[in-house]
Image (tube, rainbow, N blue to C red):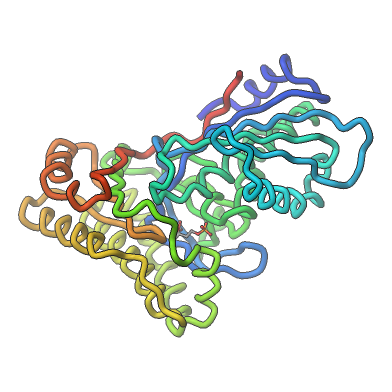
Length: 364
Ligand code: PMV
């Protein structure tokens, strides 16, 4: 992770408090323990635990210029992958307006945000986590430039808080490695307001973990995550699920420390299937998996059982399958992907991703 304080001061050389730009590249993350169900201002009903990725990321640049005359409005233009985007602009402007109370300086500037993803368009990869994380870090960068100093830990914590208000899972993308968002019984460090890196040691086996993202469909989801979270309010299994997620989080912390691969696989797969079970048992119920999703999951389990190689699947809110495996099994897993799984992917597409170190600040 970069040394924030030093880098902000370096940037002060090029940027003034009147005009400048700040860029962050932030990765996406894959939840091992899923966040599904929220209340109040984007607060989770249960803790979630994720692995931050490295290849799938969003790069965002925030250009700022002091307004001639101050007013109380957000003045924003937004470009996505080089094109002006009214839809995103409206969503981001309303997000920035919603945080004005805590970040009033945002209406002192004309803002231009340029954002682009490293993963291909319509790959079905949720970009809100990486996008809101990168944007929140840019906003914290601007705050650092205006105030002239920034405390590294506070900066990340506030960025995670800010990212959460845009998209819950984005709170976790502010940090590299394994991250927890949400209060965990008996542990004071973890909070519903922001994410934190997992505090305990991580076993060597889990330090270099890979995620092959198998693209079953790049189409937009039929039910977005906001609508999905809302359906949890009346889901008859909600309370049992929140308890299960709490138990899984506490156990996963032990697993990551001890290196218990078998239990890791059991928990991760149960979490994925539970997430989709909750979708199916909502009212109305909905199905995001495709036939290929199920076929891929079956083949992953079969490969694990017959070859005794530790691989696990997980799913996000969509049909694509994340195949998680330790770096030590890469050769065999690449063969599995090429020989058995690629023909089930849309146009044979997959993303070769892995655990990453978290967001990076750019000096342009
Ligand atoms: O951050 P949201 O509101 O898009 O919710 C994401 C929820 C899941 O991706 C399904 C699970 C998770 O914890 O990332």
